[in-house]
Image 1 (cartoon, one colour):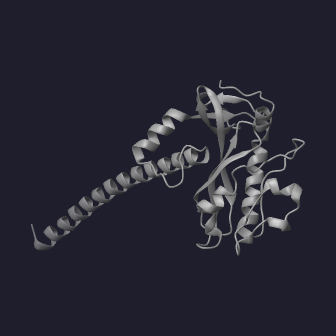
Image 2 (image 1 turned 45 degrees about the horizontal axis):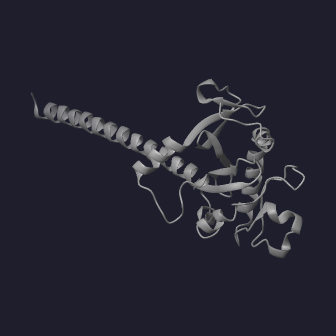
Image 3 (image 1 turned 90 degrees about the vertical axis):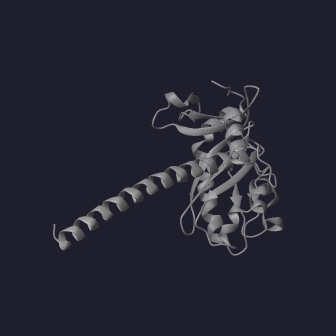
Length: 234
């Protein structure tokens, strides 16, 4: 075999080996990325429903164990009824419930909102009264660090706890984000439904306000059932 032929076959073999190694590495990394994404979503659901406390981080195995023991995924029909994950239809929406002794303690809904630079993903949890916010988290966004990026900070997310999505007469209101601190700038009747905004991030607040409203409107049929005490574990 000539020198040029040997060089050619060596180059081909090297390419094949490199391709196999790259494919194996890519597959391994993809699995790890999917695992990390699933774990991060579990962590955020647990945080939203009050099972993870700020300043007390859990290791991977603790998150998986707690999620398995306390969280159950149901699907919500357009009429607001809960169905098992194996029986849901294409128009149903996912719902993550925190169970305590077979009783729904809180429930979390996934949030997908427009942002200034891209999508904002998180979870909003409500008490089983169907009216009071139990927690709010953001696990992915493209907002500007130090400005709109503050939506992922603890101080901002704590602002949501205890806010009401309905007025005193039970009418749906949603939650809005103020331009900066709410304070006296917000009418007293709207303060239970308003969280402090982020200075210099008015557009992020505006987009997220619209996204939260759209999400809560989608889940309003099941929230109404919670408010009327018509929901139980299937």
